Image 1 (cartoon, one colour):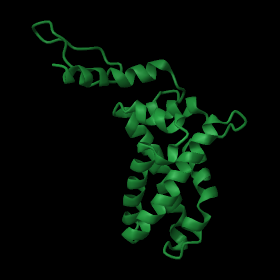
Image 2 (spheres, rainbow, N blue to C red; image 1 turned 30 degrees about the horizontal axis):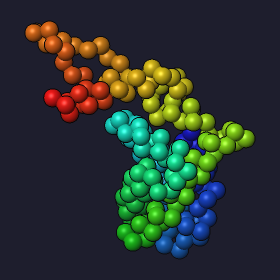
Image 3 (cartoon, one colour; image 1 turned 180 degrees about the vertical axis):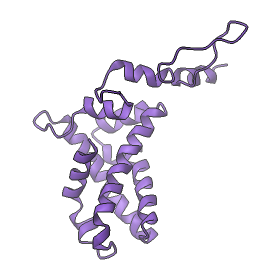
Length: 174
């Protein structure tokens, strides 16, 4: 998936990156990879922290460019560009133009039945950390119950929280 995402970025950043005099040519590939990993890591972070709604919104809203995923990925990308020594204003400008566009194109490709470059089930499988790279309901359940670990009990017989999303939600109502 990351390789396909790199290719998607590469195909769409000619003016913003390749033809940008503020990005040294020898850093073009690093910038492309930084954009891809920023998007991938943001999607993974959103799922692992239980913000499934943000991921679903990005893929279903038809407005992925303005989604929380695009905003977080743009911030991450800006930081990575700054780490490469790119001027902060230039980094912000590039991130604001590149990341929302790429997130939008990614969601369009996953929704297009005639485009097999991105499959939403494969993406979710990679993001959910399925050992086989396939999306399974058990992978999502594992995210909700702390990785599918058996729940431990306290000496008084009450359940110990295992750190899953459901336990975090339960803690809100205590």
